[in-house]
Length: 399
Image 1 (tube, rainbow, N blue to C red):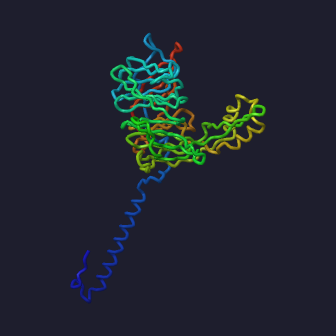
Image 2 (image 1 turned 90 degrees about the vertical axis):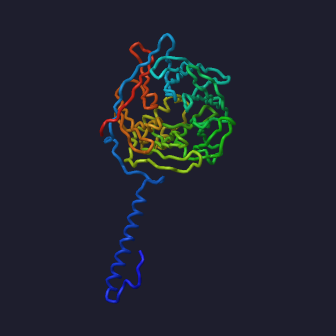
Image 3 (image 1 turned 180 degrees about the vertical axis):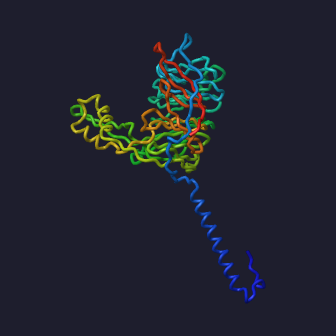
């Protein structure tokens, strides 16, 4: 606004000054309001307000198909299920050490048997099945520090490469740009309490620089005595805080189980992108619950635990529970969080944008193996005692 000198006469000077003062005050008020609104926007370091998840929309499952063992194959122990880019279903079987391949309608097509120590073979299976575009899958051997990658072409499994490491790793994910996301613990004793996230080039088998470092999960130490020999074993219970990770489109989603939601980081720079963590009321851990979990830990090998070990462990247990018991990734559909303090098994689905999509209360028999590509996969036992795979889709109801 430009005030021209010849527009103000002596008699009107006071009124003009009052108008000018009013306009300036209004401008400052507008600026203050804009600043308040900008601060109210979700920032990477912010935490969202408390939300009552019981008011979330209901997730309603619909049964699609049951896959039973037949003369061509049989399920031993289903530990993971995923859907490939072409819609086919791959089922990781821990007991038979194989991956079963099914069509998108659930018809059996082939099996990959990978037991062994040679190229493309796994001796000590971790139970993790990873997938990426172009119908790629990966399995890892936790004793040989190796990841084996395969590509599914038509109805066959073709071994692509093996990636070996010098030491163990905690977790990994496949990226669609032919790289791996690796989670390890720092070798330096000063950093051993942190998870290290870095990229691995599949073609050159080289690790990139550290992208992100976050506090590792909480644990407790068990001390055993065998005569003159003693050793310490670190472990966690269901009430200790843990880290879980999901990867999608060059983004790392980090779930800390003592919070409700996740934080998102750029996989190349490590910069925080957004924070979708909801404030929740704390869940006290009772002394009776502490006793139950510690007594279960000490139940085996009770002759070797040191005197006073039970009391020490009880004193080192956390005083509050995590909010989340288990995390399952199904991006871009969302991230599933199994709630800790519930009478029935309940899963909260949070979208890739950080919004609560709905709440799923499990009512069907069997164990949830995975959520993938908008499906719920459940391992169940038939009346004849055989393992079978139940497949569900779901719809979102009203809150």
